[in-house]
Amino acid sequence: MKSRKGMTLAEKILARKLGVKYLTAGELVEVPVDLTLANDITAPLAIKVFESTCINRIFDPEKIALVMDHFTPNKDIKSAEQVRICREFAKKYGIKHYYEGGACGIEHALLPELGLVLPGDVVIGADSHTCTYGALGAFATGVGSTDLAAAWLTGRTWFKVPETIKFVYYGKLKPWVTGKDLILYTIGDIGVDGALYKAMEFTGEVISKLNMSERMTMANMAIEAGAKVGLMIADEITLSYLKGRAQRDSVILYPDEDANYIEVKEYDVSKIDLMVSLPHLPSNTKAVKDLGEKIYIHQVVIGSCTNGRYEDLKIAAKILKGRKVNPNVRCIIIPATPWTYKQALKNGLLEIFIEAGAIISPPTCGPCLGGHMGILAKGERAVATTNRNFVGRMGHPESEVYLAGPAVAAASAVLGYIGTPEELGLKEPN
Amino acid sequence: MEKIKGRVWKFGDNIDTDVIIPARYLNTTDPEELGKHCMEDADPEFSNKVKRGDVLVAGKNFGCGSSREHAPIAIKASGIACVVAESFARIFYRNAFNTGLLILEAPECAREAETGDELEIFPEEGRIINLTKNKTYYFKPIPEFMKKILEDGGLIPHIMKTFQASCNI
Image (cartoon, rainbow over all chains, first blue to last red):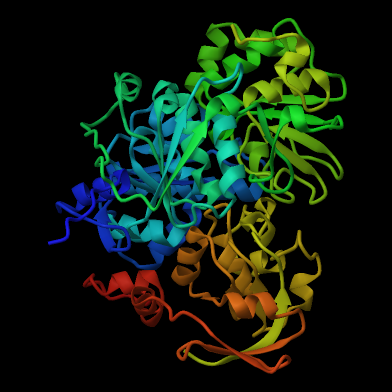
């Protein structure tokens, strides 16, 4: 008999949830979900769908998170109405994990911080960046509002088990280079549909040394390569992050050594520089040092579910300390969660930002999706630590977004054009 | 599923959900309102020009980006009867079926069709005729599982079959 291949991490997680020993890519499965989430844009639509069924029973109110993060603090009457719909729904059905106001942060920074997502979980969210939780070893993916409403009814969702591409990162990182540069480089290599429908499994010595913040940055952008999930194997770093946070027990799963990968990509990170994605696709990447002409900018945004965590702010602070934001630039810094905000306050980061002339925003998705708190005018350019640079993403259809990590963003805020900390004489982060 | 006959509106590769329905309009879930702004940042006149029954044709990775279900809802509300593309982004693919927007993966047809061409689409038979170019194309049949969802009238009615509740949806 032909021996069958081992399982990838994605297959392992789904097999465990189903209670089967073996599962292979291509199979259609219906799995129970550990957490479902939605925000102030997608939840109202899911609520509308849910209520259209006139079944007034949610499978498990404990397994729903509603995070009012996109257009909050509410930018206009319509968005305030949307939040009101969510608030009333949460009250009616006794949804414990409802977040708004001072308890609210950007969903994909907030929920892991609160210990609501754990290794081995299956999570669906009506937000494409739900794949962020792959950094914790959870099979987490974005769905639409109807898929979400369906899961509220049944507690289950269906997937086609994805094929997996394995990404191996080795070598020594250059100064200032972070997970953001690695993922931009990877998307630049494989393209915005390079992992369409597939699982990305991020591995190698470099990944196992990254902190959770950088791991989440990488998994967050798996969707920007079209992937269903971006997975990492949970390890000591994951467990120490979860210590004191985890709300439930979890299990660490490993891919088999002979797992069936459809492709293996290897990257020597010592060759990866500080990266930027030029308009209007995340895959349109270039090393900052190869940009040639100076690209002058009007705005810098440091925040979002990609790079608004405490570690990101720390990098920005190292660069902005004792320096001034260029007078032609508005530098907007958005701590992703209340905890991040408090840490930044306690440790003097906020003072550094204010002294530098930056603007500090409350936790919100805000300008990342052109919502509010920093919209671009026609012809304006921004460097942002966010995840998408599509046409009109941050404002006017003729504005431009350049994606980068916190080091390039902060350095560019001072320089007034897209540049690196080295150009400010900062050779090493420490 | 009935035959579709309509004019083509052609777009390129990687048409993202921010182009299909910009986030600045996501403070509502009203289909009619969303339909008015469909494809606005790619073609500000789109919603005025499109006629009920027309076909949106695009390249690779159509619907990439956000999970907003407002995207297929906006397309459907604009009057578009079907989207034909070389390939679709996965969340958009699910959302389209769940909200009852017919989408078809037909790479050759998608590459060759031009704005203004007239298409005749036979979803059940897996066949598209470009009447302007006088050429017939065949596409991958819709996966059995997805077809069942469509037949039941969308994901929610499909799921409701398992519930005993009787309500009009």
